[in-house]
Image (cartoon, rainbow, N blue to C red; front, side):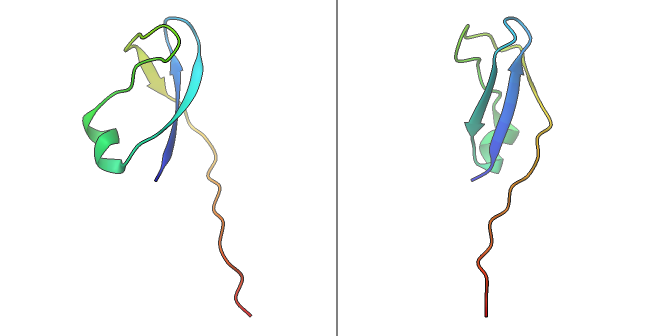
Length: 54
């Protein structure tokens, strides 16, 4: 499942949450620190792990 990173506009707390793509499209998470719904998704790098064949 994809991991999404957010930053709270009220308290500045940065947090990561795991959501399905459909959950991400339907809901906006609350800040776990101050419970505010004023959060912005931040850009993050992608890490992909693959198996080696051969």
